[in-house]
Image (tube, rainbow, N blue to C red; front, side):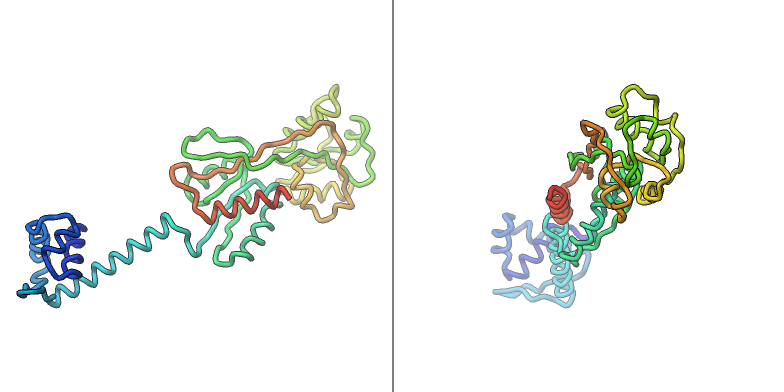
Length: 289
């Protein structure tokens, strides 16, 4: 591989046409400039012909000059990609499904406004989100528990309240009413239900003692059970708000809210790319609105 300093010396020498001026620009001695050229000619053959008042490039010299210019253009492209705003690309975001039901359409709106940026979105539980960001398969992730891995930067994104959702018209004034309705479960269902229902029904047993009338691991489908009168469930607000048939369900007040903090994560070792940062600001503003 050719020494980059030798190439810089050769480029300055051909631009200025003079060993003295090239040495002054590069803060080198004339002897150093001559030595760099000698090293290059040892590797590539005769590059310049010394004339009384100038130098003349040989065919090999012209080829090397083209190579130097190509290397400089490549360096500028690299600088632009690493430290400057990229003109186009892809943004990868991976989140739990509940908040994803709210964020995904917003990201589609964002892509419509910035068509040069393509959105790649994935729904996944916390462990998969962490792994996807740590292995650089996704730029950004959202998790429900703040990670303690020093390779990740975690910042509060927003809070998501839990809601008790029942079929429209159902009367829920006592624990016995929940027993009659039956519980529609999901992977986080019992943990969420116990946290929320303990605020409203303090003296009753665990939700595990209630009839289990259904289960789905797809959060978008859980409320289909409830809308058909098959039971009640406890889910995050954004999952409930995304359900198309709101008239078929109701939210029951359970006293002081129970909220989950959502954490935005990305790799800590390098800055968040500018387009990703702009997309995050856009999402935060839209969700606040």
